[in-house]
Each structure stands twice: as C-alpha cells, then as structure tokens.
Length: 106
Image (cartoon, rainbow, N blue to C red; front, side, top):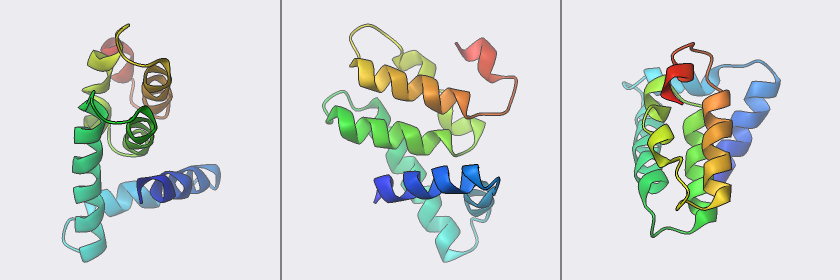
C-alpha cells in the first residue's frame, strides 16, 4: 500500500498538486485519518532496523511527501550502519521538503 501512495505522491508532485499535504491536514475525514495513520506507520517502519531495506525505503519515500515534522527524525538515521539504499531514501525525502529548516537537520 505504501508503494502505491509513494507513486501517487510522485505523480502529484510532477503535476504540482499538493493533495497529499491537504489530506494529511484534514484529520476530520476518513481519508485524512487513513493517511495520518499511514504516516505514523511509515515513521515507525523508517526507524525499524529489522525491517527489509525495501520496506524502509518506501516508508521514507512516503514521509518525504508529507510535512516537515514527518521527516525531522530522518537525519538521525544517516549513519554508516544503515543500508546505503535507506540513506539515499532519507536524502531524497529531505530534498522534497520546501522548508529552509531542512538544512540545519543535516
């Protein structure tokens, strides 16, 4: 499911549509609640060093389409013991953020 949402996020980004951000802010609708739960799960998966690297990559990619708060913890995972694919996913997720606050994180 996360892979499908990541693909949706990429398509929306290319069309300059901010639907995912809007859905995350709309916690009153069932769809907004589902997206918020999905992002909570993605944050947990991103930190889970026991999870498969592909799973973590998808989770991190999803977080990159969310709010700055969703990616704030990711720079702490940029360490040599993390798989290279996970580190690259973190850098890409941070690069998707528009806030200047991303720079001090790294």
